[in-house]
Image (cartoon, rainbow, N blue to C red):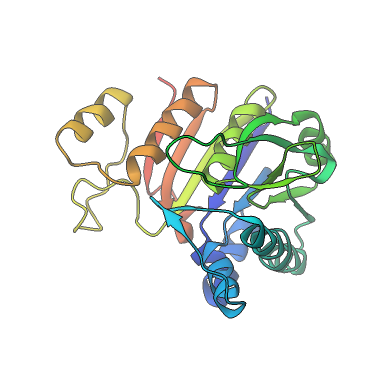
Length: 257
């Protein structure tokens, strides 16, 4: 199988000029087939504020009413996505910015209301691997915004980590996939106050033990649960690292045994 590197970066990295420039330079140096998945939440919050629309979050997840949906569609699918695409083209990378609605790339179901009504938020149901594989075969580098659709004419706000994980799992059927989650730390830390206490590798049993001991907590737990689900579904390796380290061996490496 051909190798494919799928890199997910958070909004902060792609929303600030200097960190975006560095990311795009580093990403352009990644060899072989590749995909970039991005966020953009800070820009969406800033635009909402300027327009007098309140941003409501629950456990880090955005409540997406009709007004908010318009904003995230503009910001994620437009401003942030096209800035990335233009920057990559300047570096000789033939990038194509896509939402899940484009070419029916990713279909979602609107999240059902249980304890919380998240509004127009989608849970991924289907990834069109034929379209993605065809684009990659033509030398195109997809840049995926965190938006999907329900095939009934509605755009749905969808978590970027989920977009990355579901895309990696789907493409593992046709590629040897490495999934890289970038965030502000150098990897999974043994001590959250010590940036150099990176755990170099992690098994699922070790992960569960460290959660029990309270070493791994908060938002890192769902990130790692998604990681092990990706490995279980055929992704070769998941790396958790800092965005400026994507061309190094640093970070926490999790792979199939």
